[in-house]
Amino acid sequence: MNINGKQLKDIYTFENGKLYLYNDLIIGEINEGVHVTIDVMLSFFHFFLENYKVPFGYISYRKNSYSIDPQVYKILPKNDLLKGIAVVSDQKFSSLNAHVEKSFFEGRYELFTTINAAINWLDKIVPLENNNTNVSDNSVA
Image (cartoon, one colour):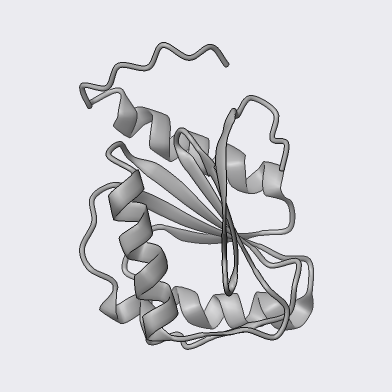
């Protein structure tokens, strides 16, 4: 997935979908028809903790139709590295579900109709936090 101003580091394919990994961003794309349970969400979350040592934003790219148990947001372990969740969908049903999910999540969580709008929002949160960490990044954007 090509994103202007972001360098794709890796793509991980899981049984339930794909994760696109960038320096300060993860984009999750869940497969059609999947039901995201607490176990699925915890496996993604542990993957994030293992692979990210600097603040990052997460985009839930909902181009496919799937369901999420909203209770998963209440059981996520505390993590200061996850700075915000952006949901991207232009489908009414998915947008309604995202509004319900937002009420279960205690952090920053917003809904957008485009990936670019979601990235713009996350870029306002994540770089400010990254400036306060001791991270050496020699990559050129």
